[in-house]
Image (spheres, one colour):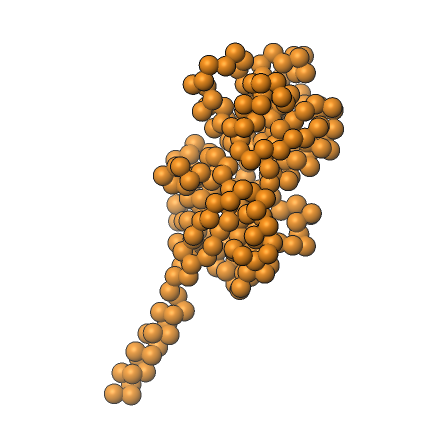
Length: 249
């Protein structure tokens, strides 16, 4: 009888060790990476969900404006936000996961716009004294635009910058390439006079996007280690590539 009880105790102990644990993510809308209106939640959400499942974690996504999401992570209210780039300005306040995906920043503007009329294909874009829109919370993009001499304005969603471009309120819109392409594709059904184009040369180097993790969230370091193991697992078993192929990335 004691032996049977011992086995049951071990089974229960093992279940408690490996049972799923809910983790909370604070994210904003950044289509097609994070989008509550998409069945999958978006490409980045699907990657994070798959990695969590492989790690025995249950993700709960809470949507906020990006600045509030970032503030919640800083304060430890939720475990992590994504997708973010690990830049030096963030290293003291946050932990970062292994790479979720790699992409690059690109510049969109109206075809035939005076500021870019003589811009040759493959040439670096110069932004001195131009009004450039970015999405609020995209600090790495904002810093790149400011370093290039742009006058930066921030909005909450990509589609707002698309509208500002058409209205002539900004000269260009700087964002991740996939985000620009997705926003422009959705814009093409509208009757605007000008066509928005994306300059073919990346604006700066490729960027590696990750989870940005709270240092104050309970056991955040252990949870991050488990997540990284789950991410490695879906890369090795082919699921990661399946998700990439689904989105054409």
